[in-house]
Structures are given as C-alpha cells and as structure tokens.
Length: 207
Image 1 (tube, helix red, strand yellow):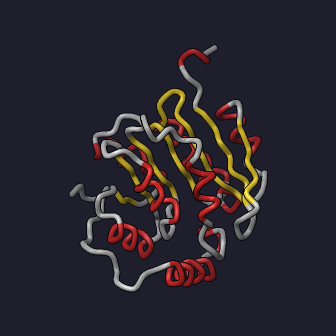
Image 2 (cartoon, helix red, strand yellow; image 1 turned 30 degrees about the horizontal axis):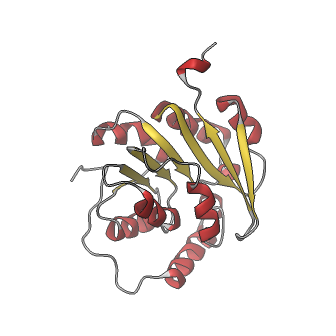
C-alpha cells in the first residue's frame, strides 16, 4: 500500500446501494453545495457519455477527479483492461473511504491538486485520460486553474480530458487550454448536463 495515495480497507460496506448512495450524496450536498455541485449522483446515461471518448483497448493509465459515490468509478473498473492503472481521487473523507472499500484494486486518493504527485508515487509518468466530475462553476478561478494545470501536466500529448458541467461556463477556458472542445448534451440526468471532450495538443500541433 502506498501511504497517501491508496486506501485499501477490505470488503465493501454491507448494505450500500443506489438508494444509500443517493442519500449520502444528498446529505453531502446539503452540507456543502459548492463542493458537491448536485443533490443527486450522476446518471448511468451520463457515465456512458463521459467514458465513451476514451480508447479503453489501449489506455494504460487513467484518472478520475471528484469520484463522489463512484458512478463513473464502477464503469471505469468494468471498461479498463487488466494492465490499465486507475487513479480515483475524491477529497471528501467519507466518500473516499467508501470508494476505497468498494474498489480495493484501484488507487484511491484525495485532492485533485495533488494529481501529479500521486502519479509519481504510483510510478505513472503520463495519463491517457482524465475523467472529471468536479463542479468547476462553483470554484474560485485560482482553484480551477490549479486543478487544470495538474490535468495538463498529467496528460500525454493527444490524451483526452472529459468533464461534465451543468452550464457552458467552462467552454471558453477549456478552449484556451486545449484548442478544440467538443460539447455533448445529456438530458437524461438531474440536472441535465453538458459533457466537454478535450484533447491535449500533440507534438505535431506545436507552433
């Protein structure tokens, strides 16, 4: 076990399921709406749209930022190849412990601002993809910049960054970093969501 990077806590908590997850998520939202962002966990339809842009047949290292109760995490575990390392980051202590218990084979850590440091501890040089569920619209600009600086540093050239938001507020900022940004609307989510798909410029794009 890598201290500070991975939390391995044995078997999943008995009795946890979608209803319990929903209640946990709602409770976190009511206590801290600016950091949680929504009163309900993401839908499976949104999870599928978020993970579709990633080539899971070739990905060797991926990260999820703001994993929450693990809606995307569950699908990441199902889609990734055996040789692919998955870093699952969640800052909330309670939800992070739950994720570590449910997914002991994945590397569960905390703050997204520590992404590259966590990668180093896990022996990962670059990521093929970063999946993000953080509510950027609720964050001050300096926090957005700190997280996105980490994402850019972590991704390999041509790597994909996929995030969802509840508005188009982040389009201009992401376009400034990545150039082309594809936006996909997902109505089957509460609230409805916009999925941003961005790719880090490759070496051939320089200049």
